[in-house]
Image (tube, rainbow, N blue to C red; front, side, top):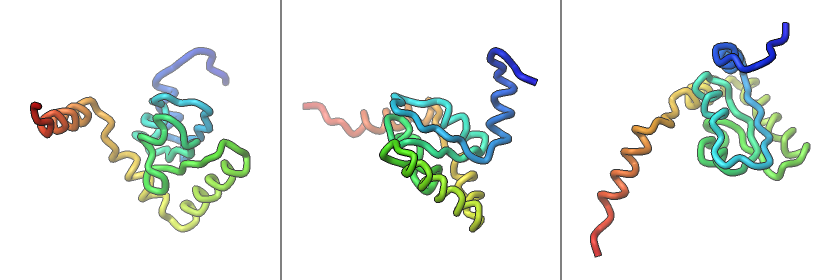
Length: 120
């Protein structure tokens, strides 16, 4: 059965049922999909670019690769395969699901930064 159109519930069930989330973007200024995937425990395998670098910690909350070549992608997938083989994938999944990308966390960090600024 094919679904034509967007179904948020279905999309989230797909994330939740996935082990890995492959994101070989050439350009990614922010990237929400890897954050959603992480929330559902799908470990991202992503090109080291833009906002993906800001949200994925290589080897802890996903696998980053660079340059954007088939060989580099395969190497990252090999690291993911090894994580499955040695059982560390569960630690990565848990770390992904514990990430806090909320506005509250961002606001707290901003308030801390402003509190450390001294008037000239």
